[in-house]
Length: 123
Image (cartoon, rainbow, N blue to C red; front, side, top):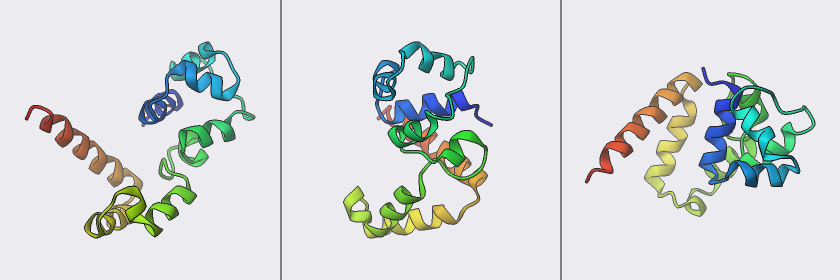
């Protein structure tokens, strides 16, 4: 299971944000973000909503091992307008199937996809 710090780092990297940029957006020192990602400290409860908004993740996922990283609003918007996100009809169908999987199974599928993508970089 990922720690809070690992989730923050992973989500920050996925958004293409540096620790400094994330800190600036939150109005804090970048050392605070470093400490969060190293699991030395945790964000204050007052920072969690803004952190989730910036990282585009759900607070349930960030703070626990439940749920998925994506907020309900994001999941709904992706499923309602797949073309907007560059998804073709077949991709949209796959996304809907993925959403039916249990969270632990989703993690396995994501790791498999990441491994396949990493392997394809050699070509």
